[in-house]
Length: 246
Image (cartoon, rainbow, N blue to C red; front, top):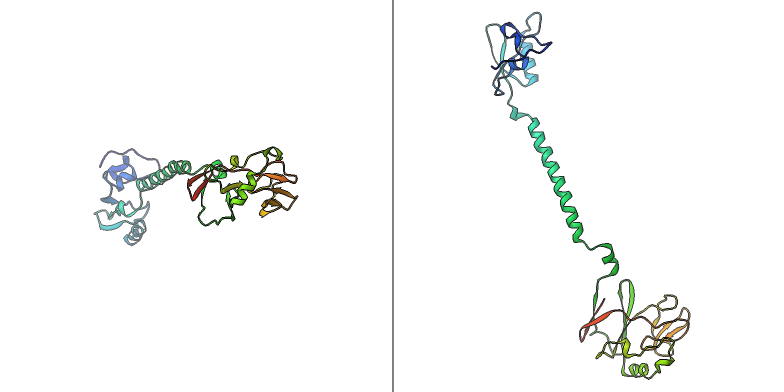
């Protein structure tokens, strides 16, 4: 046993008066044998001591000459220790820290709000669209008309004097070179934002029933309150039968 500092209020017997109660109970290396002192006054019966040992987890082995019970304490491995708690707490903090580090990285990999709002490009297969037929797709939340124009529709659009148009623009300027039969326009009336109907109106182009705006087969305004032609969205031909809008 190592030397001990006395603690006020604790008692021990005989020559061990200058030792603490802990040194009287446990060896320096932990575990092993320990001696429990009887309470002040008449000696406590051995049966009551054994009962106390059972509650505390100590196992009585024998009694010495003075009647003191000699016991072996339970191994510290049988109970959680402060070191175990520190291991668990450190692991939890490390896990939270790792999650906090990974989250910004995952967040940066996602597209930002402006990219989502702008809308990704879309591809449209033109093969199913018959001559003289129109289809409507959506890009950036807007309806897009794709018209497979007939030869007659193309000729009528190019026979018009550009200077006579409310919003002067040639048909050639509104299509892609080498793809005269394909007209791609935003299907929103330039008057108040209504959706015009394809293949309607006096010029067999687009007609807006809301306020009577009439567009020709090139999507140019010919009659009504709309001030400008139907807009042409940005698009390119990926192949002869496929376009990419946006």
